[in-house]
Image (cartoon, rainbow, N blue to C red; front, side, top):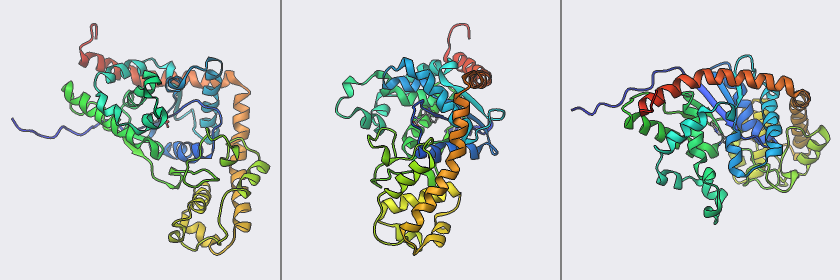
Length: 344
Ligand code: TRP
């Protein structure tokens, strides 16, 4: 017997990504995810999900969950994801996500999950008090992606390990069920200056909705005055901006602000430094604040408009769920058959 490598995946290229329904979307979400979701639409068939099944791993919030789910869906659309083109839907509306996650639970190994740094960070010293769902979170994520045989997944740097796990699960499924090339091995799309947006006060911490101080982040719905105030108070140093990228080394806060400017203006960091190198923060900060305010204002306005009309948003989400199901159902049917379930 020869040990030929399995055939590569030969199906269509497809993008899948998701965000948890949390309120308080901020600039890190926009540059790390939403802006990329929008940019990929011209190149791939794109499926964007609001992952409410993932949200309940952090505890129940039944009064708020549906509202937050609509809010994230509104942010997708307000940022420029076009529901006439891309699929926008809610995870729990397509039940196959849970079904495939169960099959994958029986593929993934305990040891694989025990290595996941995100769980370790979230659980801290209290792993035994966490829900089983939180431990299992990355298996559900693998099911999200592979239910559509997605090949590319735009995510932040922190999701790289979860993507590796998705590839391990896909490969082991293909092996165990003698289905070479059935699932693709999905690749993360992480590049770009928006990959890591940091806290405005401490350049070594990620910008996060859970930081107790609102001054550490720019929210998508902040108005121009709030943005100006936050940017002006952002931590910097007394030196002028450097002329080149190399000069950003060891200046994490400055690097972050320049990175934000570059990402928001869709220019390179070098290009931004060509303009601002040698100038002080008295010049750069107002320019950055104005850029942010100009770019975020239309998004906030559109989010408010969409949130004021939940029926219209629900119509978009229900048609998105139908389209998602139309892709997922035949793939799940084939999984059921390969696994050997009765009636499949
Ligand atoms: N875990 C992702 C995050 O926190 C969210 C997510 C859930 C996701 N399912 C996904 C991202 C599938 C990409 C693909 O950012």
